[in-house]
Image (cartoon, rainbow, N blue to C red; front, side, top):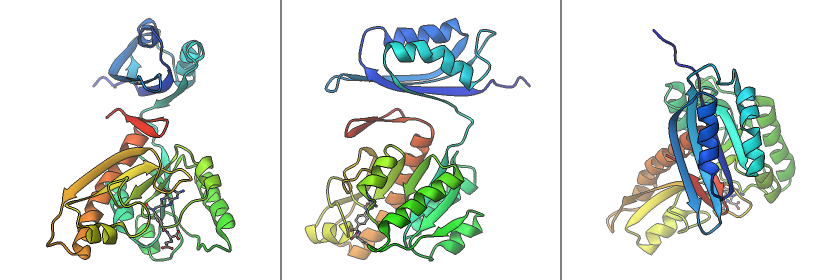
Length: 289
Ligand SMILES: Nc1nc2c(c(=O)[nH]1)N[C@@H](CN(C=O)c1ccc(C(=O)N[C@@H](CCC(=O)O)C(=O)O)cc1)CN2
């Protein structure tokens, strides 16, 4: 059976101009690149252009490896001052997951990963509680208990970064991690830290959103996955979903319904980020699904 050559993904953003797509696709044609998927978007408000191209080699002119592909695109990246990234689609990005006491999002990610339904590597779990050590270690994933209080917050955050460094992790996922990361840590992890907030943002930011939603009498509840910034629940949104509720639902009902929404929304966001489908556009995102 003929083996498929590896697939690669190029994503970039740059100041919009005439000829960007022609330059990218022209180079691929010159170098025997076969386009598998191509999506682009021009943000007329910011004047920036966004593109994702998945491609593989289909002839002798195609570079031998990722370094060769990067070298081939370098002149175009420089010409348009692109913020660009090229990756091998077979390379699984490495994630560390942070969690406090709620297990539903962590459990869902571990299950999808361990059953081969999420093409990432979960390189470790950090938590400010011991509760979820057994679940984590049952999946064969290292668990790091890093208790935190106002007295040791900076040291604890340094320890989180050390776990990521030791694990060779590209991303941190806050899978119901109930501590606010400092602006310093948020800046260090800009575009690499995903949080699941248990409301349909911008509604009900902060703590206890389900109680406040119930008190407000909402008819829809939801969850929001977003990149983390120093401003609580303000980061660029990656994915959201909602479910209908009504006057008969107790707070406990909302929390129960919300857990499923949170897990599904976070898993989609992690998948899309892992597949290099999410680009940051100021306070927003462009998601090439
Ligand atoms: N820099 C950021 N850090 C975190 C964010 C974020 O958006 N930016 N999101 C939170 C998660 N979260 C909502 O999604 C959230 C977590 C915690 C709180 C909160 O009020 N925490 C209390 C302490 C609660 C506790 O100890 O159990 C507090 O900090 O006083 C609100 C929202 C994760 N980090």
